[in-house]
Image: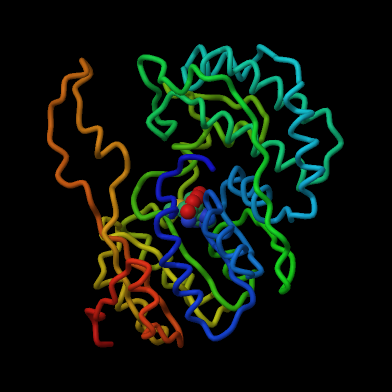
Length: 357
Ligand SMILES: C[S@@+](CC[C@H](N)C(=O)[O-])C[C@H]1O[C@@H](n2cnc3c(N)ncnc32)[C@H](O)[C@@H]1O
């Protein structure tokens, strides 16, 4: 899967422990699905998964990894082999992202562009088209020349960017006995009012950084348009306009409250970090208005930029990063018995809520 800020790869055992504590199994919504890792793990546990994220590249990833079921594996393998034979194309994509900016080497850029252009000529249903585009996106991610976000690219080609682009098929999982997974591309409030499930998992952005700005090349790869771009990073112009309430310090508390109110789910699990715009006390007092609340916490490594440190344009290290760890919280809202110790076994600590209601 692609490198992604806020990806919950390391938190999945804790989320699974909460899900396994429930006395029932059924359907779960992953409302801010990103890489779809969490949704995929829920499908592996047997849940019917409904994914949503307002960026189109995320719907493509979710469809490829979660909506597409194991019984399509043979078709998927044949498709990936076919894509490998696509002729290279040196056009707008290569010029914009490999020469004007330098996210990929031109050698890999012409292959990305060729395969993506070839996909447009095939008569594929939505699931297979998403599998095809997602396999190019993930292959491109493995040979990019960034520190993991597309705000900038490295001055010198990264070591991995010199590798040859190689497609891989997703590992598909069989359909849940509770029904087929689905993937949506709605703003979270709209999704909360339209989608219904037994459980909701919420992993909103927690600071000002907009995902579309960090992953604009994936958006272009999915939309396959030739947008107006700006700046050294060659971002799509829409990156300036698209604003999420969850990226706003004054907006997030009201947005979270509306979301919790609108969601028709018995149990809600919310991921949030101690570095986010909503301090733990505010989050807890907001959630306590909506039912029984339990809080789990775990120390977590901060993103790669924190480890690399602060540098002057000359490349000289100039500052100190204040800390390398943060605390991730899982807020569990609803009638769930977490007393069996299963969350502690997964590395999570039960916290006493700070607010008493
Ligand atoms: C922290 S990330 C989720 C990461 C995901 N759980 C994973 O493990 O990959 C937050 C996601 O919320 C999406 N997002 C931001 N604002 C949104 C909004 N208002 N409605 C729906 N999705 C939104 C972003 O596109 C991003 O993928």
